[in-house]
Image (cartoon, rainbow, N blue to C red; front, side):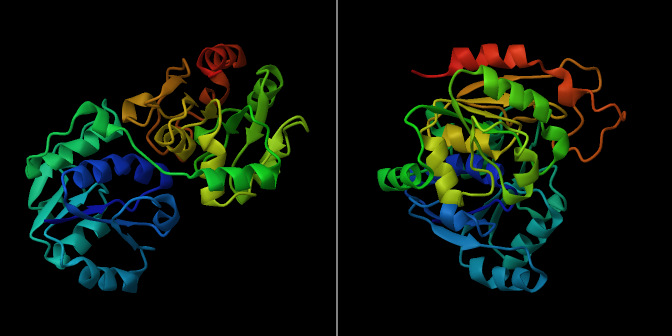
Length: 314
């Protein structure tokens, strides 16, 4: 049986969907995966058909013909576009969430609920295929080889012992205040590597010269290799948490406007939340609903430092 996984959301969402890949592969299904073009690099090591999709209008029509040979599709993504493409592909067995837009177009629907981790929520989509995964199968998995690690260590002259900070997000309300990050980098007692994309370059200049600033300097595979050898990854609510966990590295999430209730907390590590009445806002907040931005500063450096000291591996 040929089963397609459809997850065209952000990087971290795709990482968490790798548990579905593992579960289906273990049961000898022939698996395909549709996602944004970065999946070609992200999912190296998986023996599945990778189908990049950049969400263009005309490409949506091409996608219909490219996937129609599949027997079943598991749609993690809840958008109207996803539902329409999969409906017109005429894949006979289409599973989606009941909260998906145009969920009526799926042949099988499962409840979408907050309050559980995303990997467990995704695993519910396998029930119509009568698949009940074991707990250990739910962990996401990515692959980085030793040659990639060696090359990235040489390229950036990395120390053997370091902690990674990932302070930035596509949604600024997910970011802990930059002054707190700088203070933490001075107090943590380990060499700190700061990561991020090119758009974060200017903000990263707030850090002292005591950190190794890799913001905007790594490819996706290099980013993964850097995270794979960290003692700990400290991050806002972002993909770095899930990539670290998928590589066996503990992560600490510092929440601001979002919350672990949405299900994107670390599976290995810990998290800390702000104690403010208005938090959380939403999974991907774009504007402070009360105008105070209090959550961005609420979590103290002292509490984060204490958790870091507990989590850092020797």
